[in-house]
Length: 151
Image 1 (cartoon, rainbow, N blue to C red):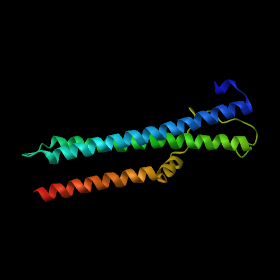
Image 2: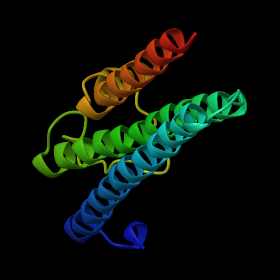
Image 3: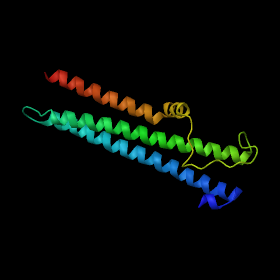
Image 4: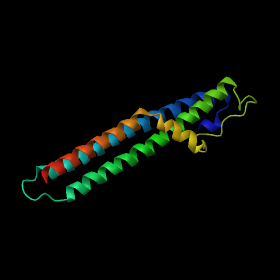
């Protein structure tokens, strides 16, 4: 629908739509990452709660869920930052900034392809990604300490 509108109306609709996508991707990232981390920690907990000869199955499942949580967080961080960069392009257009001084409207968020380095830099500056790395490192360190103490 935004492509059928012209000028200012298209900007308003598309800017709001991109804002909604940014919130959606960010919320999905937070919810899924938290859920997957919880499942991973629960699997590690199940390993340590077994009274006799615990199965390594729980360690593998817990580790797998931690890896999946990292992948989910990175995928949705990528999507969030990509939309955020496109929203910046829309804002530049609305202000008449370069490269949109001639009035050319941005191509659209589905075809917007920012530089991979620009995306990585934005993802690197995202506190949620650093929190995830710290959380997983802490969980793995704690599990390793418990495994070592148990042997």
